[in-house]
Length: 379
Ligand code: FNR
Image 1 (tube, rainbow, N blue to C red):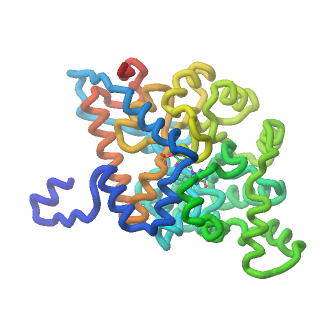
Image 2 (image 1 turned 90 degrees about the vertical axis):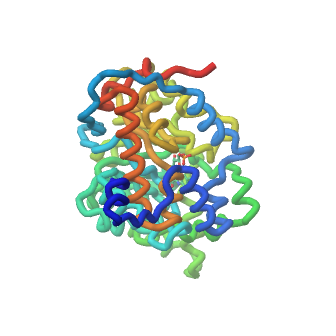
Image 3 (image 1 turned 180 degrees about the horizontal axis):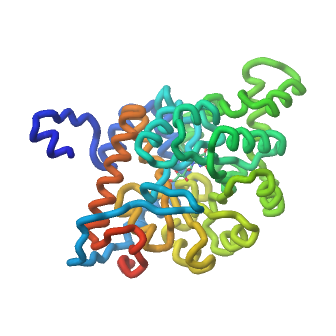
């Protein structure tokens, strides 16, 4: 399409092409503080780098002469049809990189037929984002917090507003040690940009009435008291499962034993993730643990994966090693920072086009035929 437009003199290609170009443009577009928050990771940032190092060690062995003229990127997960095997990961406080924040990302996802996962700590509310998406597929991410009433209220609001699955993120019992944020002292400002779901919530407002002091900082302080819960256990998670009729996936697992436990507790799937390296320093790469996790839970249990996905080759590798789909994290935030909704749409178009070519050139017509034999680990 790009070449056709150029040939007919209509090309006004406005956006970067390729992840390094998006990243560089995003860095120019963001404040130092926002860049540090988005790009930063825990401790020495070693887990974040390990995600990339491990993906780079996996190499694709292409198959030839197989007629790849018609191709299909679609898949079905938990009975839900996906046009592509990727989603937009839950990312909080998106307003710090673009004034339209989550509204723009969600609208771009809807226009691109890519599912969107809304964060608990979004800059716009569950209902506002639902409205921006029309009937397009959306999931809601929940942080297990300290107040069951607020969590139940979020879940019922998500059901009401047409979200079709819940993602419970269990790797954030508290925020990781993130040097870039500590240097800029950014977090106090940041939290105020991520409480839209709280300030619009009746159960949260009821809490606020009871707490002393009604200054604007009170809402942020109350939010900080309850939004995560270090005491949360498997028992609590099993109870939470009963609070919604939607499918529930557990996000933030990297150990096969934990994934098996989620499966046996009746969860509908997992998202193998180390939060983009933002929580545990010195952690395993998600791509490295995928094969053992797939083996532990059998062929049909839904496994999604994120952390380090930067281009189509990474999607291919994750699918080969046992994932059913992946989530894009930082890459779509780069696009959001560069040019709001339009830029995110363009990035998604690029991801799809590259994945389609990647599929064809490695000898596949469908993502369902990609298997572990199609990759090998470089020694
Ligand atoms: C996140 N992530 C995240 N996860 C979640 O469950 N709820 C959230 O609110 C957030 N917020 C958030 C903010 C920012 C700035 C980043 C970069 C990440 C984690 C996210 O869903 C995903 O797991 C990672 O982004 C994947 O890693 P990569 O691909 O970005 O390296």
